[in-house]
Amino acid sequence: MLYRFDPMYWIISLPALILALVAQAWVRSSYNKYLQVRNAAGITGREAAQRLMRAAGLNLRVEQVRGQLSDHYDPRNEVLRLSEGVANRASVASVAIVAHELGHALQDASAYLPLRVRSGLVPVVNFTSWLGPILFMVGLWLNVFELAVVGIVAFSGAAIFALVTLPVEINASRRAMRLLDQSGMLRSDQERRGARRILSAAALTYIAALAQSLSTLLYYVMLLNGRSSRRRR
Ligand SMILES: [Zn+2]
Image (tube, rainbow, N blue to C red; front, side, top):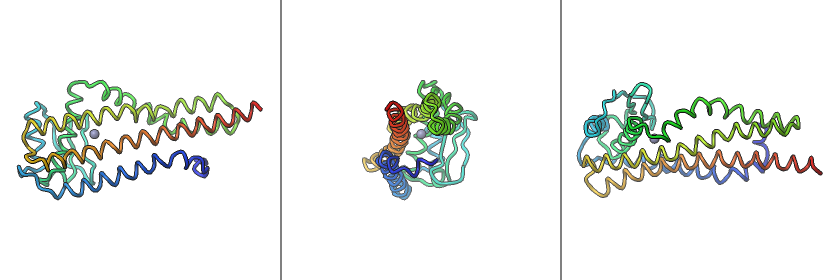
């Protein structure tokens, strides 16, 4: 998109960009640190998954997936996919991440509303998040105000998606801590602090994503506003 050359775009989006970079770095550093810290119970992510599922009454298939921090719950196939580090290490990071993904599975099992809304938005947002900016720029270029507004409305779907993602992620982490507390898997305060740190860092990345889509939206509105006031003059 051409607006990437506009200094105003960078001024508006810089705070959110910095927040995103900080959040990423925080996730990486806490993950790397607590993947090395052995949990006192001595259980791997895979074992933690089995124990926590039994305690929570869940019965998911557990598979291994390539990459780092690629762990996720797949609601369509009811599969818990764990990265190699998480699955096979008896670390604080492993149990925290497993518990978080099981938090999503519990949300799914209880038909947690924000998760449902979020899943429903996925196909819509996949479409509107690229179409919106195109419609907006074309509308601006051709001086068709209405088209630009339609572009903004379409693009705002991405911001709504990011907004709905927040409660989903924070709630999954809350469920994770509850699961871990009930299981007695994390025995010391240091272990609980580590788990909490990883989950908080992950939450910050979702806050940063929301800030990023809101700042792009703000930039669009400002561009359009500048254009229409010029037209009125
Ligand atoms: Zn999550």
